[in-house]
Every structure is written in structure tokens, then in C-alpha cells.
Length: 428
Ligand code: CMC
Image (tube, rainbow, N blue to C red):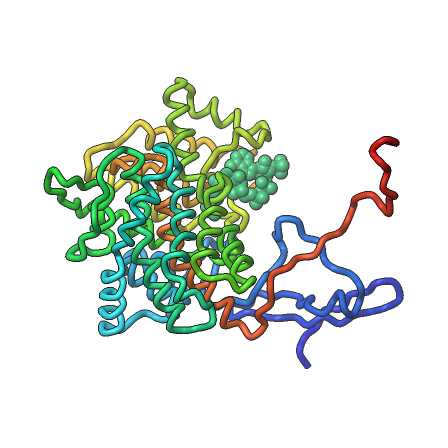
């Protein structure tokens, strides 16, 4: 007989099924708990709640393991490209040459955006944050493609998926170009995915732009490392918004908004701003670490801590090494990298961080690389979003293929006033 857990409430005992994943993770299935026992579970921040069963990404936070579709992140980082990883996440397996060529051709074919979109970006204030602009632009894709919004039509879904992956770099680049008053650069389909993105960001019509292979490699790596991370805040947002049966563009637009927050993807921008503030205010790393230990939420050591990783973040290890390599190759070892390394060294020996299992996360060094290659800090989180896009898409597709599909609708424990009569305004 399958294993169960027993829950005793008063003099009644309830049997709850135990579900086990392929890596031995176990969960108590409470699907019928309220129906059978009249109680719900309470788990603020969902730190202890599985929202779905998923075959996309495996994380073991204690051992610092991250795998996409079973493949170690270290293996993918060393050997793959971002588009190949996107294929892996979306279709569930590594592509054959023919599959990959067809995928790449389709993505390349869809890179342009409707000419009227230029006015969309042009209508935004110059200092519009690229995350706000990208979220709005992705949401607006639904207005340009009303013929492909059905989440249950495989052909419509596939074309929307390809359009999204193809057009996001163009949109992110347009939002940046608008913010600095430079002309939008049309995509160049003779360049690869990342090279074209760099060209649209940093090229101008006045002179040739040559893509630096060191920078191209670093961006591929960063995008791969960000490509999925199971049920984090933005992915859960994509799933819950998607569960209302809304179209893919709307669900991804919501995910971008969730990612923007400084506790999540926005941390990469916050880290570089923190490092610059330490440099500009002439603080020592030790002084800043002391401030971050006061427990004041407004002064945290940004880029440290993770809900799941309690030993180390494997993405951070790869990025730290890449960061050193990139800066050495570009000959731009910066003061910011020095401060970051000092902060890390001090925090890793400090009992406050050690006892709370706070380690540097993916965002701690990524901004230093982006900064060294000339990316403005307000674009960092949009780069994270570009990387996370295939993961969001894969999770949204998995949600719709799930035989247990349901609209996401958590419950609550009400703590407000009990029945209260209405008081007319003259008697208040
Ligand atoms: N600096 C100083 N103290 C911290 C930090 C930090 N970065 N992170 C957590 N703490 C403390 C926190 O004050 C609390 O202390 P106490 O137990 O005394 O109250 C304890 O550590 C546990 O923190 P928590 O906020 O309950 O942990 P959480 O799992 O809810 O939050 C986190 C995780 C990532 C939001 C948090 O560690 C944080 O705010 N880190 C800084 C922002 C950051 O780098 N975010 C990027 C996350 S990785 C990329 C991504 O997923 O997007």
C-alpha cells in the first residue's frame, strides 16, 4: 500500500497520501484536507508549500545543485548556448541538429517588431525603467497578435513562444535606446541571438559595431544561468496568472513585474548601486557589513541570502569565476569588483551571515560583469528577464498540460472584525 501520513484533529484521524518525486523529495498531499477535515494549512511566503509537480528544474538547496531537465547547470554553462537551453526547457529535451536549426530559423525570422511599436516606446518618459517598459510591451503583444492568444491551441502557443523569445531582445534594446535618445536599431538576422542583442543595444547607425567575443560569451553564460529556477516569485506569478486561462503574453508580462522587485531579480541592480554607494561614500566593506547586520530591511547586504540555497548558490560560483575572467580579458578590473570580493570575504566569516545560512546568490557578481561591459544598471534586471523567459514559458506550458490543472486560488484565515452593523454617517 502507498505510504500515507496521519493527521489527528480532536478524536479524528485523517490519512494523507505521500507523494515522492524522482529525486526522492516527499510531500504530503493535502488536496482533500479541507473537504475531509474542514481545515486548511497556513504557510505565509509558501516556504513549505509545493504548488505543483514539475519535470523542468531540480534544485537541492542544501547541496547547491541546479539542473534543467536533469542536466547539471555546470555542464550547460560549459557546453551549451542560450538558445539551445531555451529549446531544452521549452521542448523538454536537447535538440537534434535539424530541430535546433528549425528553431533558430524561426526565432531569427520573428526578431522584428511591428513598426508602430516604435511609437509605443517613444510615448514613454525618457527615464522609464526598462522593466516597466518591457512588461508593458510584452503585454501589448496581445494587441498585435489577437489571432494567437488561445492557451490551449498548440499551433497558436508555439508561434507565441517563438515570437516572445525572438522579440524580447528587440524590445529590451528599444527601451534602452529610447532612454538614451539614440535611434532604434533594427535587428540583424545575420547575427546570432546574443550578438544581435548586443548590436541592437550598443550599435548606432553612424559606425560599424563589432561584437566582442568575450562579451558575447559572458552574456550567453549569464542568460543560461538565469534560464529557470523552478517555483520562485516570478515563475509562480506566471503560473497563477496563467491559471486564469489568460494568454501567454499577459502571464509573462506579469512575471516581468514580479521579477523587478529588489528581493528578486531587481537585486542585481540593487547590488551594483550598493557597491557604488560604498565606493562613493568612502565606507569600508567592514562598515557596510556591520550596517547590514542591524536587521533593518532597508539596509541588507544585497546579493546575499536565498530562500532555497542554504549552502551555496551554484550559479554564483560560475558567475564569480566568469566575472574575474571577463574583467581580466577586458583589462577593466574595477573597484566595484574589489569591494564585492571584500564584502563576500567578510560576510562569509561573520557569525550573523553564517548562522542564518546567508551566502552570495546569483545576483552578487552578475551586475559587476554587466557593469564592466558597459550595460547601464537599470537594464540589468531586463537581462535577467530575458534569461528567465524560456523558464517562464516552459512552466506556463507545463501548467496547461497538467491533468490536475485548476485556477490558482489560495485560501486565508480571516482575522478581521466579526459581524458588525453598518453605522449611518451621522452617528459615527
Ligand atoms: N542581508 C542581511 N540580512 C539578511 C539578508 C541580507 N541580504 N537576507 C536575509 N537576512 C536575514 C533576515 O533579516 C533574517 O534575519 P532574522 O532571522 O534575524 O530576522 C534572516 O536573515 C532570514 O531572512 P528572510 O528574509 O526571512 O529570508 P527569506 O528566505 O524570506 O528571504 C531573500 C530571502 C533572498 C529575499 C533575502 O535573503 C534577501 O532579501 N536578500 C537580499 C536580496 C537578494 O539578494 N535577492 C536575490 C535573491 S536570488 C535571485 C532571485 O531569486 O531573484
